[in-house]
Length: 253
Image (cartoon, rainbow, N blue to C red; front, side, top):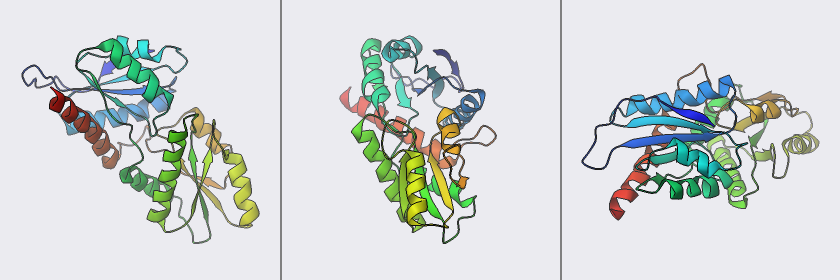
């Protein structure tokens, strides 16, 4: 686990209810991945100077994600998982981590599916100069959790509606159809079409590298890039997830 690094300013404490947001991501991040994620967290901190904003990178190779989170967060924090779909790490590991923290810690919802993510996906694909004859495929990380898989298909449905064209789904791991198989299927059904991949991935890393090597004709950038500020839509989405969890906590108090 990589320890938390604060990216915001001290919170304006309201009585006994401090405003504390801990953004949690998992994996063993590369330099590019880390920088891209920090861009998003910095955007959140800048948009809400009343929040004490920090980030925790929880190493997915750590068998005890719950213990890692409990060691890296505060008992009065709102934990916002920076994941597009909620698989094991959110529904099991992070939830157990909250139990170990105790106190008033809250777990916010995952980021997707959401139309703001779809808008950023459409923008990324637009940079590739989509033509009428292009076949669009959404590459997702994949999960053993059926609900997470359904959420990826829901995002593809929303993206198809946004683009006004069909969007096929391919998974990089843990679910089917696998991305190379989906690309091959599209080429069989639509010979001669350019296969363009939109990446339902938050930041560069191992999954993006695998998607890039899957054989498509063009691939869009992930939602976050180390050299660009985070899209306002994504900053707004993180803050909305925080606000919803914080409001639920206040209602129960």
